[in-house]
Length: 436
Image 1 (tube, helix red, strand yellow):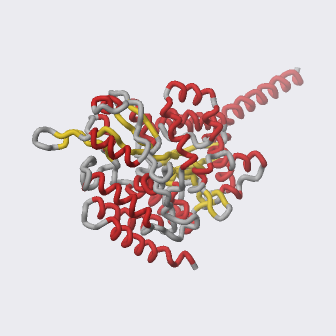
Image 2: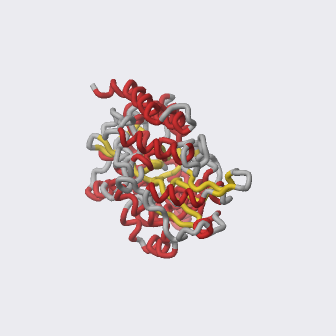
Image 3: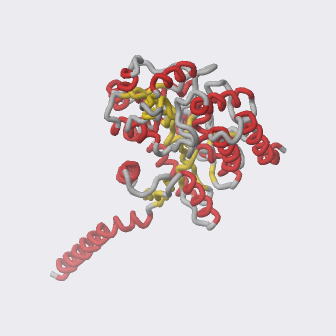
């Protein structure tokens, strides 16, 4: 009898203990979870944050021992300031999506880990080779990979097919070169009886990222703005000055583009409101245009001069040094996961950014989307002609020197040749110490 009671008591104790352990198990797993925080360059709210939150939630379901914590950190410029400030205070994020052009700055600050050192297995090394070479030009230096392409883009040309038709132009044919774009813009610019412009032929923004839009002119004019080491610029090259003269002439001489500085942020709205017939902007605006243009529109590669081409643009994933080995491995797993072909394809469809690897365009999801919406493939096709976005040591200071010169020329306070010579002189002063 006593033995039976003891056995029953032991079974009860064992069952109770097992139930208690099972109940506590989620807390144990949660306590052991590795947290990966990352700065993401948008303000809180909006469709992009919902997409990122969904990615984080899906990853956590598949990887319950890793906690992904997106932190929405404002603009790209605000994000790098916050990331570097957090690093110096001793509490940086594990990951950040920052401009690909921030690479040299982050290296100089000794802020980041190169992904090459973490990619130990053959599969991981192959993953580093899976991205478009054009995107890796702003992601690699010195034989190492410092950034992983994610939110990447090129500049493309959008046009209003209805306005083309009204002007007697073929609505399905974009201007293929600089001469054609000028001729089209002349026909597309409209004025009222008093001579006031009611519709501009073309709009190339010159605020926000003027140097980047300018590369949409220098690249087709067969000149690059800097060397691969990021310690020399070529702002006063004759082809650079010629490209700037063409840009200035669109407004000051031919009067087919609004004078002065044109706002980056309002350019898509001007396009939607039919204030402009042709606009240049990021392919990252593709989904925005698709959803908001109340007219048939086209998308094409930038018009050629001596060649075709555009700079690449956008953001990379960077891994910060002040993270634990466990966080670095968790971050590697997450970034591999989010840049997989299917997810890269879906990200491109949802946002308009370019899917960052060729095999993303081979997925059934992307093939179906591109078949029904051919503009989705334009930026991809332009990549074969693309060059690296302007990126140097002291990149913000060097870029400011060029931006100041561009805006001086566009507002008429300096001639293009003088503006570029002054910008080159300032860039040379800043970069000389990096050529020792």
